[in-house]
Image (cartoon, rainbow, N blue to C red; front, side):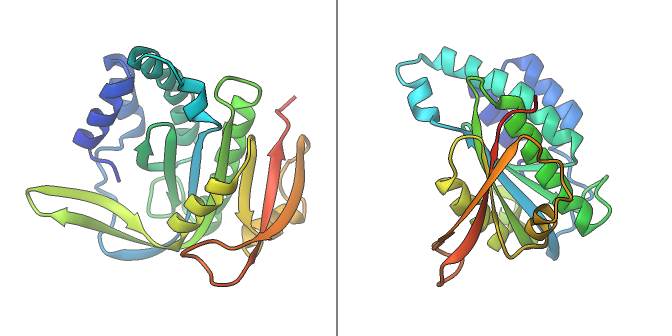
Length: 229
């Protein structure tokens, strides 16, 4: 997970001082005392970014890009916070968020998975038909929570495992306003059984081959947001 120094280095490129201070106070990303080192825990990972980001900022000055991302972060991060998500990495417009019962307010594996979907859903609906229209994906399974790096030189609390790879690979093939989920998960089964409110969403599916995940083609469910009104 991102340390305070790492976050400040990233945020300083795009966010003003007040927003950076607010993010630290509200999300407490820098102090992971509750994070258990070297433990495998069932978790859910979401990867979300702005659709067609490169073209949207083409020709923009650094200051304009900073202001653009400032607005994006200031909307996205409180939503992530509200569902108990823990930000693992920020790569420009791309945000990787982990949901796990080892974090406060997520007591069970079901809580973690459900909140990851609700978070994704609200982000897509919030950014629908705005300059920040997004695309996203969810990876579910065991994550290895550990510390990487060299002691006293560079250390980082992070999470490793297939859910990270799944979220990354699926997000790569997602389209505008979509959430992609592998069909063989309990989350997908619950969604298919109408246990979630998807009144303004449409569904499709296809089979894909995901590098680094499975040697065979797998079925992927695609949920397309239509806004929340």
